[in-house]
Amino acid sequence: MLISANAYVDDDQAHAALGFDARDAGLIPVRFVIDNQSQDKVRVLPGQTFLIDNQGQAWPLLSAEQAYERVKQRV
Image (cartoon, helix red, strand yellow):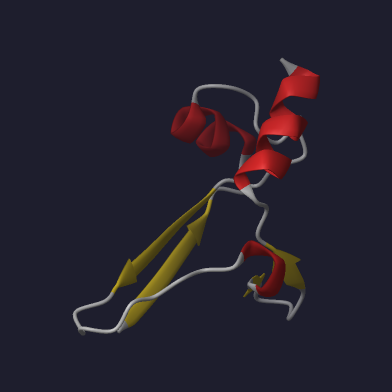
């Protein structure tokens, strides 16, 4: 299994990726790819999954509902 993630930390990249000012909504858009070529299922649990940046800081994944609420407050 291969996993990769690319964060759009630049405001312009984030806007281009999502079409709105995601950073202003408190989001860092991340393209998260799992290449699971096994027969086993993979499940990502937002409350238990963190992305680690180059400084070693852990950033939790948001559930769809959490992301929706942040965007709804800003749009």
